[in-house]
Length: 89
Image 1 (cartoon, rainbow, N blue to C red):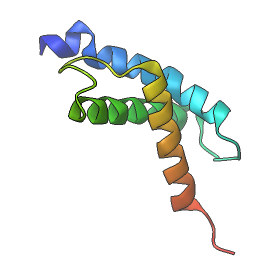
Image 2 (image 1 turned 135 degrees about the horizontal axis):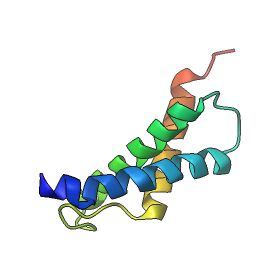
Image 3 (image 1 turned 90 degrees about the horizontal axis):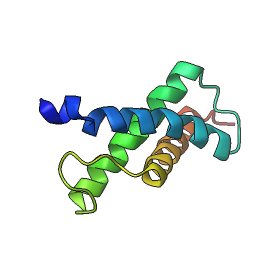
């Protein structure tokens, strides 16, 4: 519980918020996501980066994901979202 309140998760959420905004600015195209979903996307990208980084030994337990990793995670999720919602012509 102390890790959650101590900043590990909170820092990941803050980084994710900023990463979501940056990922939407970097990735071309219109994804038609609102502001709230952009925030959720960034947070999910940061959590994804944190999980993968911890699994690969890049991050210690409770250590937040790096900012660049969070942005990359958010872009990956944004690409997956775009492929999932793509209309077939």
